[in-house]
Image (cartoon, rainbow, N blue to C red; front, side, top):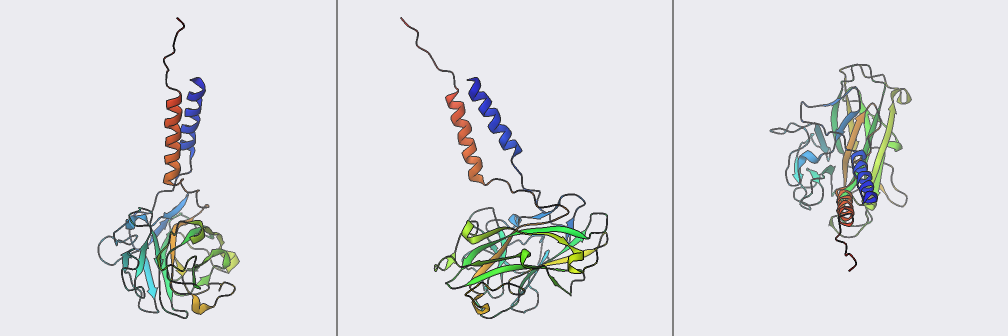
Length: 289
């Protein structure tokens, strides 16, 4: 019984010590606030499994995110994932498995060539000091696709004035190839349909950029067309019919914390605890006659 009690304590301590997701950003103004410690984390889960609310959007079209699709005027249109449920040339998608709370924000287009497909958000330096470097990390996921051979991806850019942009390079790019000829929904959380932990430290001096003053604003853009490396054996014209989604975005003075274990991991731990408790229960013992 004592041995089982020790194992129970160890498992409980393991759960308590499990890395937790940082708190997601709460809607405020039309920019994200980067704090003095830790960082800004956006999971996009506030969009909900069926809703159309964009991150930062309260009432009306205002949002943290400006969408520039097909070279049109920046749009802020969002739709829950219905495979597909709106005009893919003009709408951004609230992606994720049907009914699941884990969401992602992404773009999908059926056009050929190299159309503009950008997601841009503003950030404010609320660290209280000049910012000459910060960590940018994010995941790239596929949730929509048509037929092979196709590919898509996201490339991160930065702007200090909202108009001139600097490509952050291949280390801040995630490119994926279609994994199936089946049109429609694919599991964007599956290893074959996702790239985790894209990015790292952005040192402004490396890019020839001036530090961002305290309370200064900067912009990050995640482009589905500009700056992407074309995969070997493919062409730029094949960058279509695939949705590239952004998830688990982190902008902070330190690196992105480890993500919390998936729900099924907790379920397995819970079952283990129940099993140990059952094995450790008092038993009636027979006495010799």
